[in-house]
Image (cartoon, rainbow, N blue to C red; front, side, top):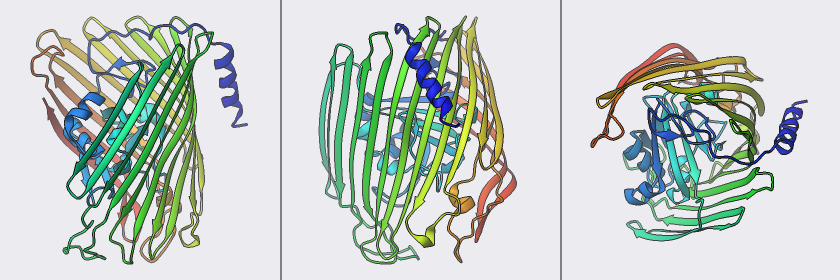
Length: 484
């Protein structure tokens, strides 16, 4: 029964395809132009605090990692447990790493066991563009988007393109990457490859009380990405996207030759078409994978597979657009070692959502709502409303209120029990209510600036209280950001 909606959507997309038209227009009274903030099928404007980092900016930044880029260009707090390849976490406006959703080419490709994505194994050579949207977006993306969304788009151009790069640095840091885009009529193919090796120093110092080993902890990474598209005779555009990145990183464990082998991968096929001049549609099917193999005296393996299907429609209306769609998400976790087995290894989530983005006479309104039906927790409703007003030549003012949620991870609920950790199957999902107000300059101002004040109130916050995890009734995060 659960497969029938997917089959029906595939048939509708194939039979109803019409000539592909230009992207739906949108009144640009606010900026920047992004797709992540509204789930638009073409670039749209937004009231949200959004940052777009282009390939040209990545090349000019001199940054060595994704974490450095996000910290410098988007004001995202990053915490690392060591040098290259060691675990890193993202914190947007005080929200934890598990409360920030990371997408790669629209796919969830992180770990459902701990609820995060290993950004340390996503090399910047693999990235074409990054979009960072701060503030709750559960009303469009569901669980994990309480703090914000970071979406990474892999390499690819719309025109013929060739690139190659190499670098050498301290700690015998060697890296090389190359890629090509070829276009032949209605067919386009992009392929990129890269590798990095660095003889990094020890992941810990003598101050570490737990298993410090003064030897060096080298890191290796290799990646590949592919994008192939074909425009059919009736105008439908079919696109295949695939990516994989594998890192091998030594760490200071309590044995010898301790190492993590981490693989992040995904593949998606998408059908895009315009049924009418004012109705654009995109149907996608894909899977994201996260695989961690721990080698050493305490070997283990954890793997997450996330099957994903989405049907998104965008309708043009006077002054803006309406986005509506549905999603299916199936999360499966695998562990080969009996002592770290999970008591439950699968859960399904079915979702529907709708969003409005409209402008008139220097004003803009954004609104969205979503309903998630989870096997483990039942139904959750989230929403968001934003309003903006432009004082020409002076300032732009906007405010947004939103509600979001985050489901507990598989480790929280069903993880392996030991004397140091006990899962809690009675945990409730986190819920939050957020408010923000922003002042920003005109897009044409010689110095562009933005000030944002936010207030994020969380109920049932999930925290670790040894030896288990519990819900905290209330928590609150308040702050302000200034960017120029």
